[in-house]
Image (cartoon, rainbow, N blue to C red):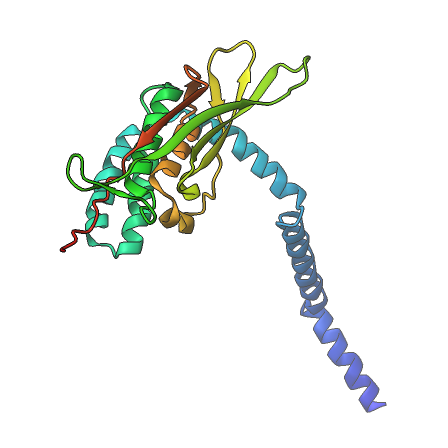
Length: 246
């Protein structure tokens, strides 16, 4: 009887101290916290989606219309200084990033001008193994044959778009070759360039100069004027033959 009485006294005392209310309050807090956690969870949380959509509706248009030219100028200075101190691999990555950030002032480029840019790239990078050495104007490698050609797709007659591909080809060195998809809204006169490449930061060190140019034209929405649809030419490599001594 004394034991039972002691138990009752302890229970009565704890009830008077508010332990039940405290326990209920604690569990309620945990329940609300868990419910909110689930509500804002990154895995389909409804509240998170609502907040995210509201933020996008306000922030994204602001970011799209903001003038970043002042910051790009500052960034250019920072990158130049960083490039000077970087290792070779990182220097190439930073140089490519710097060139990719250049703003294209002209909103249209003629295909003939783009062809000239590609020929400059070929002259710098074309493989010279297997080329004859000529001595007409001093020792130099023989020229390689290059061409640009526009191949139009067979689109539906009812479509409001036309599609085509620009092919830059060098028979001697296929690594120089590029194919660039373009499209035309039939009410426009110039074509949209749609060059896509791997845009991960780590891939920038592996991109060549012409790829960077194409990516920059594409991201700046530069239109292509098809002033030519086929042209061939010859390009003399910039690399000079090693001197030989008889």
